[in-house]
Length: 276
Image (tube, rainbow, N blue to C red; front, side, top):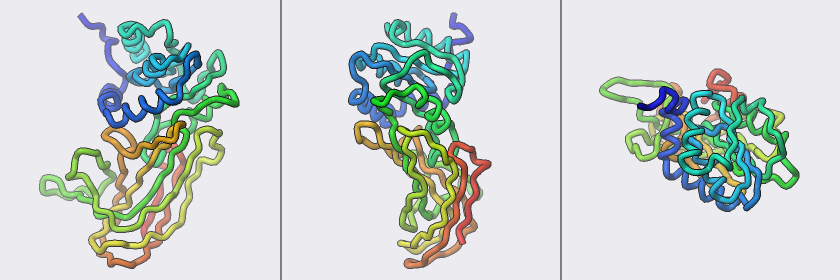
């Protein structure tokens, strides 16, 4: 009989990340090019444990897998034993934004990304992990750029309108918004250095490229790994975030001022935006 501890914390989200092949294969390829034999590695926010195991399989001497949830710690202990990697992976229970490691590391792995870095804890977690970096440390997820554009957002479901924040999941064409403007950069974060200014405060103008019914502002992102490879949106990773705006008809060539501000990893409550 299974123990009540045999589950992941936030089970659905962790499992979705695991089975998202585009996301996990991109991380696997980057880990294979980043981790070297004998490396000491930290995986911040272990989740399913797959990234820690990929690092161990790639030759790491020791992997510190940091996890906050006690139930998940118990689950991960069983997963690492089942895969013969318990001697290479050391579980560390604690808040990844505060926890201390017993030694410096050669590689920092960690995926706590939410679109445009509005939510989740990637920035404060990385800032903490960099305390245990050497000058030569390789940061797997080295850069994240955030973008904004204007869209027509399909917001009708079952005959009802839902003018609310929503997501564009890949593989679900009915959720795809229609781009109406150019796309512009609003944030460019280098995770290899501590992020001291977490405020995003942008005033920009977006040019309408296609006429149509404008009713959404889309946030999207692109990740760059240490080896130079990139990853955009996938089923469970950095999928575009659609912010609703009052609908209006727009014409090609119109230029619309946009204001957007939020705190990196400060949550949706910190987000303010307006399209004039």
